[in-house]
Image (cartoon, rainbow, N blue to C red; front, side, top):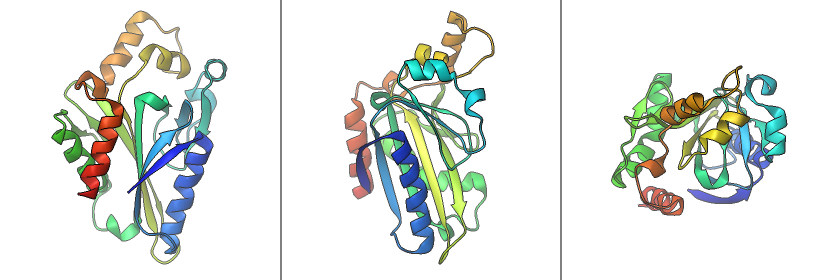
Length: 215
């Protein structure tokens, strides 16, 4: 496992794809990387339209970079102190012979177990979400690179340690209508950040993940 230093959103996207391709080519060992973000960002999925997903004027005013990742899925709202993100770069045969849903759970089982050790209510939900009984904690995305010596899978997860729902509702195009107090409260209800369950700091949780994986 690597606990990487803060990098710009553009750098993070480039590293994810580059390292996955290196694993696919057999020039890099399988790796788990815990990210640190150098600034706020909205990360859109491979097939999304930035104009449709993001209020670009508001994002610029608030200092959010808008970047595209190489995996599918929805837009991610990133604030460095409120987010925990990790990536897994593994040979493609790691997920061979299992369904797509099973591959997500195979990649994230260690994360769920580590968070449960801290007393957090964490479970798998749907195809690619990690949630509590009250709402979504995080989401995962994958891409397979069937090239090189054996191919690779890139699996990455972004989780909410905390959330500024009002700001998120301004930056993301969650509705074509003007966001009301009711809509902001609805956004809060759909997301259950880890901080709502624990008094532990983000740094403590990150260190626990590192220690758990190394044990």
